[in-house]
Image (cartoon, rainbow, N blue to C red; front, side):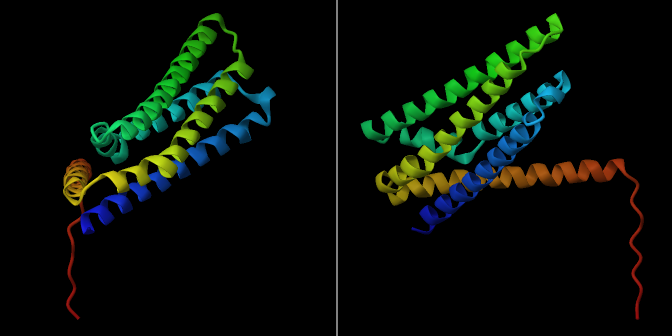
Length: 191
């Protein structure tokens, strides 16, 4: 039971982080769009880059990589919900692809369809917000109901392995940064 609790807490923390990121992204876009006449191509590129970063984060979540694949094999009810969430993810990817194409065309033609691009960015955020809400309202409770203790143990082991890999990457990155900068020797003073 402890493994199920660990897994659910890890998922909840990741969901909170994802929601906060999406909220900040929406706030950034809405704040800037209030002064619509001041928006330039550089802003649109930056905003698009932030959307792409969020989308990458969304796909790298533990829920996406471990929980949803496990639910795909847990019965029709789970398969149906996962398929609907996958469809929403694909819709988001299509919106991002369209925004990228519009930005490329606008850059080449030196014209920007600002309202269209802004609306598409809002549409992506709205679609992902609905998906997050459905994950929290339907997917996670479904997993709680369908998974056995053994299933949760397997998922928790994957989470822990993933966390261990991330910790190892962080240590390696820290060492690489440290080797590039000169370190001062530590001086110990006895009192």
